[in-house]
Image (cartoon, rainbow, N blue to C red; front, top):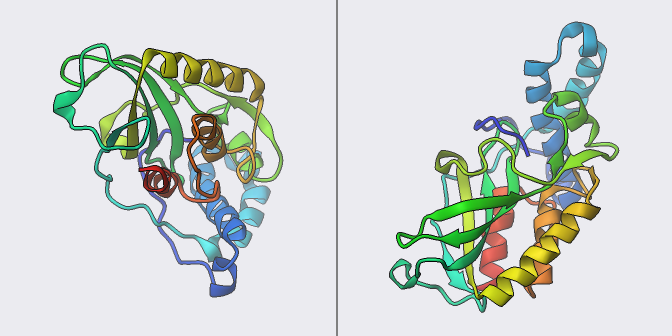
Length: 232
């Protein structure tokens, strides 16, 4: 969702709020957004709003990200595939999450592999606020804001990867999946943190491929990890 590779740390939600995953997610979003907003908005533009949001959100800050999870590669059926068996020109899609100043970002990377298993001119699809400014991002936790559906800063940098599941595809499987992604990108005009978020976007791609998907209110790292665990 957001390019800065840091994690906001704070107190945990009260037990009553933790029992409601959507509420817990929303409060975590608000908490994280405050930290980003502080760094990028001037007092003249947002002093009063910042004070109000801070008062509402800071008591419930949380951070659950773990160190980067091991890479996992499978075929389309979910069976794990050894790196040595990957061939040059192999088609793939990789469901991936990365760290950010806020709770992170979930997205898909797709293309072909070289002989060493590296990506050749990879393409990225993910849902995020169209503007890099903090204000639309914060507003998007309440109402939909214009979205972008391509790459964001840090998506392909290994230092920011927090979890990933790479799936090797046949040419026919790949072409079908990419056609779905292009259609989804064309239809996805708005981003909203608790409904039309990056997890939901990637979940729709995974569902189109026949995979089960976890709750969209998880942190990106947990979403990708659970997505892989549910289907392998």
